[in-house]
Image (cartoon, rainbow, N blue to C red):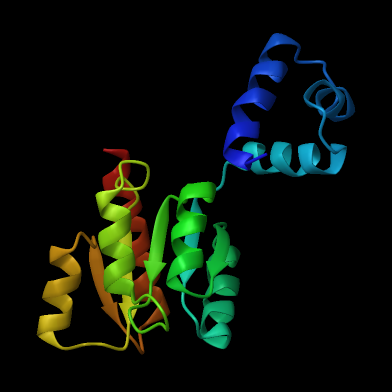
Length: 170
């Protein structure tokens, strides 16, 4: 069963009976109680969620640690295909998207996410070493909300994330 289908069922059961335990929910849905615990934990995390899509593990891990220290819930994807899957299943508040990735590049990921009604609302900041004006224009025209070139200043990136997230609240 897809987690996107499980979550509404869990919430409905919890609404009907707020005292219901995770074990009772699991039994009611015929699912493993560990899966139910995981989904309840996911549903109860109110931190703003950032999805980092970048195949460079060292760079994304360092960025993840820095953003988690700011109180964000950070998830990672190592390629464009995984980035699209996680954007849809995790529903992040913002995506930091590299352009140069094997298989599907960031431009294509951005275009696909912005064309899909399920993910078009998610702001995207392109975070890439491609700093040519044409690359920046292409990223912005495909729907990116901002474009930051590597190497970047962490303090500036955090400010840009806050600005883009604030725009989404208005």
